[in-house]
Picture 1 (tube, rainbow over the protein chains, first blue to last red):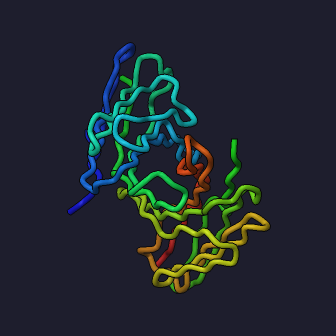
Picture 2: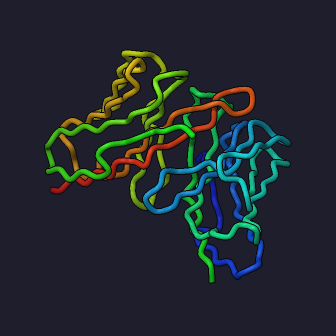
Length: 114
Length: 115
């Protein structure tokens, strides 16, 4: 079955540590996205990639980094510069980047601080 | 920063009731409006992408309408069932790069259908 796989489901970060969240899709989608959800807030866009080897900052990119070396993979690194990383992180993809393209989501990763 | 507002924040209905909720978005520079359903412990699922003023889309017992001139969309659920319990999200595409694929999401409406 085609879909988006995020791992791990739960992740704990120590102070000063970088952690990487994995997102893999086998839908052959060009565009991929990372969102963050905090209680009482809508999903907020961290980074997006329109096509392989390209990515742009979203609305809340500070303290995060991404890469898009392969079409199917879009890992997100939460760096030590992100002062409030505790949140639920969702990865999504769409056939192409455009206003008419519905996004398909993974199951999410919950990140907590130790 | 775009303002996408959903109301109400939460809703409790009895099985069999019909219900509706609202998504408000900027009426200028309209490109599309997305609706998603997010069930607990699952991933968000796309329901509709609406693009034309006056558009009405339907999926089973769920339908949505769109008024781009006044900047709102309604989502209707006819004869609610417990399995309709979920958070319903709307999202408004805005400019990013050379196209408009960046979505700004509302906070969602949490629907609980009681048996």
